[in-house]
Image 1 (cartoon, rainbow, N blue to C red):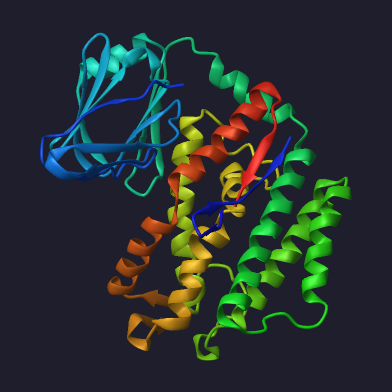
Image 2: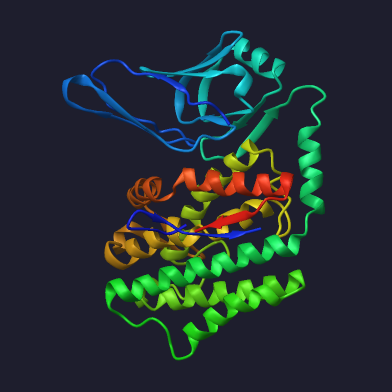
Length: 361
């Protein structure tokens, strides 16, 4: 999704109660969890204003050092001096990312009420899941993913991906007062977006989607210093810093989306536009790449990247630790996990109930 003037853009095709949050008096906190966004703002005389956004049927604990325990009725998560409490019967999937202390009482009570507990490495790589005995919902949803009309979903994903890339390219032209497109390119891309709706075979959709993606990277390269050596998207190992930065950013986006997909009990390998391992994750992040990753990476490459930020060795480009830290900090702001969760939940609901699937960008 592209965020411009605090607007959210998407194309439509096709609960857990508010948490109890205890914050010590006089403390301002921004929640750093992967799944939800909750901001507690200090006002005069110690009065707090709490801004809540959409909640999801999964709960995440990210980072390190949290203590997770429960009573028979309540899940309790303590991280530093913040305590969050959830009705145990409303927790469908507890997502644990990184290193934390998990009490056996929490495991037993969650499983007793039919909840999943999923574990991830700090970067979002799945490590394993504890499932309740005899649970059939996961198998049923996996089976539904295999039987839904892939062409309809693939068309929606491909069209919105084209729209997201067009949005970023046209915005770059407008904000920087430059000309990126050669004659006929913009018209071709717009026609391709419309033509996708009339394609029948998946191979045709994939072929046009791949062509547009290749054109997009080539067009965006025209706005970068030529000495960086970026001309198009390349396979690993990357030999230029822009491709290396893009892959690093996509990995962060991929990890966040994997966590949300498993939280929604979707099969990460059950792709709609893409095929193969983790194909569904590639589907879900495709339209989000331009706004959440590309805009940040291309700006860094254009404005602040220096020779000392990377090293070219035979057959590979190595990014410096300092550059990785800068990219990470920027992407923590641009990768909006609430948008990712909304995209994943929209797809899960569309698969389960046949409702419309809204592809965000």
